[in-house]
Image: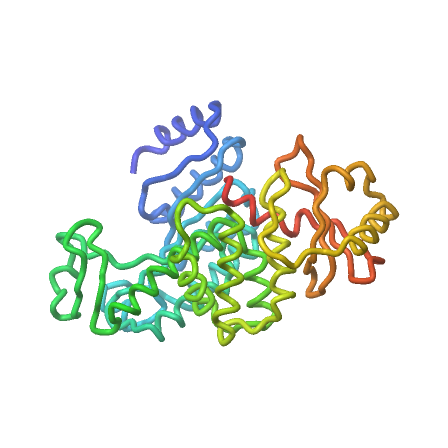
Length: 375
């Protein structure tokens, strides 16, 4: 709680600098709502080149501060971290956490609709949370489609109350740092190992922005009803990858996870490939090697080329700087055309229907998720 003059003076220096990202170490930015609003407004009005990252207790955001973030703030300039831990009331009570779940969900929803970048987290291994209740918590939080969801495994840090009560809760943890939980009265070793693998899958396939489009299409399109079950399947296959791995291997693991677990996601492999193509070819500014064998025939490629020229795409670009594949857009199967531009960080993306009559440029719809990894 430094004086406002001191804080605003530092922000004035930052505003005049080339600093791009500023992270606040305070655990609760909104502990003093009026002060927080003054600082946030200064950031928004004066620090025009910077992006600010801060942790908030979402359910205690004042109406004025919530209104600032949802109606006044430039959403590209703020990244809010929201610790959820769990939605299970008994679990929250056991760790002394007072959390208004209804209010919390309402605030997350409003911030999400305002396009504020959100980082939310859950912790696996807390008291009274078994696999079923944790899956419910995960699915409830993932339903908001926040930009990043961190799935953490409980650590029994020295000096904490939970470490003192480890016998009561049946906690077994690593003896050396980071002291991660390995077993509880509600989760066995295999279940916690699966949770750990799922956490890695969330990081690699969602938080990175690599496969956000496909994951949304699968879950929102009704091909699966449990986000956690999807990430558990992805985690199982991702754990088999040798490191380092090429990006096409990451996507091949995605396909294998779905093929191996049809009870989790029920989708035709051809449609899955079409969805993944939309994520895969938006990754960078140069052509990537195919990650599957379901390629277009030469006759199909010629027809697609002709149709693209008729739409207005340069024949030179089509001949020299393009990639063609099956595609999936607006819940329709068709074709994707990617035109790479040497000067641009991201390629131009197009989609057309199976009849090659309807064309649409879709760059903004697909690449906004892939930008996360570079942010």
